Length: 415
Image (cartoon, rainbow, N blue to C red; front, side):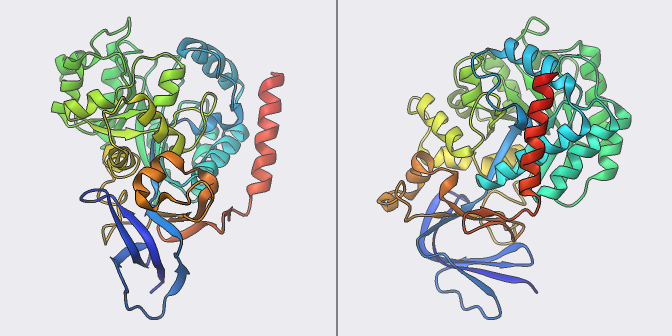
């Protein structure tokens, strides 16, 4: 049995509520959390001294386009339509399989470096089977836990390719699970939505889809209801301009919403939705979305929620959205998102002694949500395996991956 003991940390758990446990141990056995408590009597275990460390569940990024990592900063000064034209129609059309490989691996490593142990990768750059394999190979290589959303270009308005989706299902296992990344009723004709929903039902897969009130469908959830397509295993993304009646349909269906507040604000998608989702009783996850426009870490995303939320959520609620609620939004709450024994050991350790965190022991939850950054992360574990230790990523191909990203950036810029 492989055993690891985190000794004497300041532990923040998220289940059943967000709670601080001081001078607490976490025992990990064969990649799962075995016990959490003070003074655990353990023998034959590797010990990590967690004194002056904040131990908490890994973050769950519920919406991200990893392939765009090499396009960082390219869409800061534009709105949603400008992003679609410049990034999806422009740069995205130039992507070769090797560019997808570089972007996905670098993006996944960026997640891990920032304490994001699970990511929903909405991959709408599937120009060929080779592009798909490149994305999947990079996710596996990175060591991250991922929900891989296979989809078409958002500018095409066509249904997800059934053969390609089946190829993804045949390939994934372990830390990677598949989802249908649909175009959806807000951006495609209803017959496209019917086809995507039917494919997901046939294969028993969840759906992730961008949603908003649009010229195509002013009330997209009502349209789904009229078509008999409302279902619980759908993750709707954004939805800032939806009326309360549409949010109620999401709540009643048991589905979830991923918010990306920094991108939504910068691209002028509408007021932040988190408070309205809370009032409607909708499960809510937090996402980064695109590094073309915002930083790629969950600390910044949490601060965006707090800054734009007008006291509608507490720091504890935001931290829970970034962990356990995100896991619930992805259908993974039985596996990750908290430190409940039996769950996967996806954990992060922050250095509480760093200058920007010192003095934060009065309220560690608020301190993490408002003051921490990726540079404070000492250790990251995924399924009990260290992917970052002593502040350094452990991936053997890190330097070659960085070089590959630079090559991609030069290629698409020249093209």
